[in-house]
Image (cartoon, rainbow, N blue to C red; front, side, top):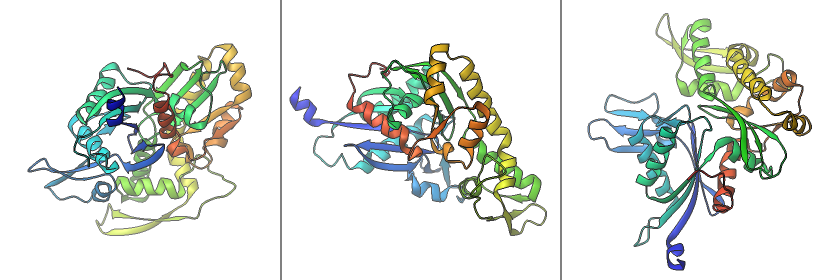
Length: 340
């Protein structure tokens, strides 16, 4: 056993729709966009992560970019396997004569089916994993925020990622109830693209929409510290000529309103399903926000106005889930909630 453990390497993977983060030796060693670029004629992988992201929306007919995950689950099995394998190579483990056996904990959305769970495990095993456990995203986020999930105290976590928003109430090392909706960062980007087409007659790509969301995205039309207006470049739909327009945060807040309302509704439904003793705990502890979507300006304030509960945004919300997955890896046998 001692000899085998010498050859075993433990890695934690937050396999996200937008970004994949890998933790090895308690350090984030890979933080890359979840995208691959493939040559159509040969099927060969040209680039993974940031390099592939730079090609996204700019490819010619022989190159295609694929995002293997949609709505938090694997949509393209082969591309996902390639992506996991290439990202594991980025850690630099395979330089020895004997490739190490990999022990992995991978993070998955709480609302996925058994078939989708199987797809994640199969992809990891094809990429070289000897032993794989899965952990649900809200549970990983709670651990990453620093909550003691094994205590008999109720905590509510909202994890807004790229493909799904996960709302869960956690107590005694388990998810008491959860609501997983497929409205998240990608949908906000799509709302911005549609708004630009309808209001400004300008066609923009996915990457530009993401940039607008980061620069001037907001959940409320009035903010205390408003961001500066942002210049957007795209193609004029009437003339076909590239042009520039300026957008401000309050018009982006209006265009995102419908999707954010759906997240609010899901939060209220999750609170309705919570047992009364845990509701009493949540009244004291409040709601914790994690994931990239929680960085949207004014979202915490908007949720507070809707629920009248204290809202806490995790520090470094983008990596809260990955941190929790890393802690779960260290407690591989202690945490019974890890899915075998």
